[in-house]
Length: 383
Image 1: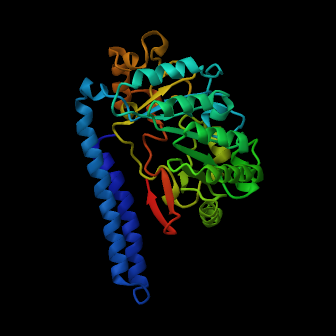
Image 2 (image 1 turned 45 degrees about the horizontal axis):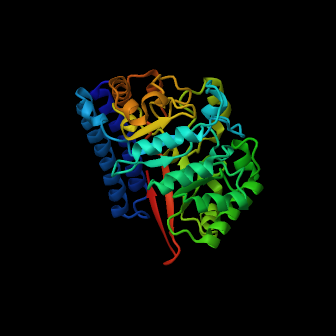
Image 3 (image 1 turned 135 degrees about the vertical axis):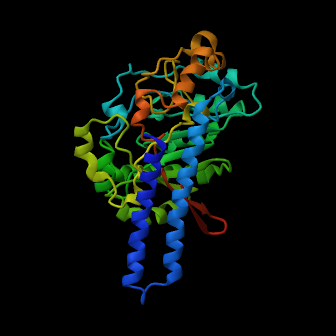
């Protein structure tokens, strides 16, 4: 798509919205403040300019990408404890699109990554999740403990099915830095429809158990966020979820935009499209153009359970073949000429998986409500 096409797409989208609000004003000007309409009009056009400027900058950057940009340790290392999952979420690539061999990472592989990164002053976040449910790897507590003791911040995202009082205590004592406890709605209808194989009432109870254990040990540096997908079924439950998350002592609640999947078949998309929220502002894709570059391969790194190095968090099937870290170590493999060229290619979005990527082309990822329990305040942010 050329520059003028992009310009037209952004401009037309914002112009239609602007005209809509202007019509409201002229027909209902006796009821609506002119300042209210003008503020909306300005906000819409500022959004248009912001998107256009971002696009122009990224087009310029794409012309020449020097190797040294990839000679730094990424901000986040996603280490996959396992690609085995006990649920069958309908548009998750683990359910329908992943054809890798199933397995569990051995501690020796995890340890080698931490040891290799220990010498760096600025240490990346170690995220222990990816295609599977991390709590299914029985060594997860050892992983967290070793990373924590070597000065790394650690993160886990879990479907909460395996959470109980005993393993909550083990995770917290191991020194976990942050965790996303996932529940996709506030009823059996909304949650169970998407999290197939999971029961809302049990998940709610497990989350409350984890928060109760946290209060018992009071780890000041553990950040707990409730994560939920924004679906057509969960939208009406949003306010109830915010109240509940705050009451049980969570640090925040993150409403994540629903993706129909980067490589979902047309049949699957048609079957499950009813889950998409009706309002466009809550949809992940809102503009008719894609971004020319993607920073994910530069700022993030993936290590699959078997030690293979991955391009990014969208490559669930390890389609982009990069060397295994067991031979030369994580850092040497990451900074090898072959790996840098493949990461640069991903940065420029030259792979097939980049075309329909629901993350690198996203306009809206979601919104977060953060709770300050001391001052009883709630702050809102959108990404």
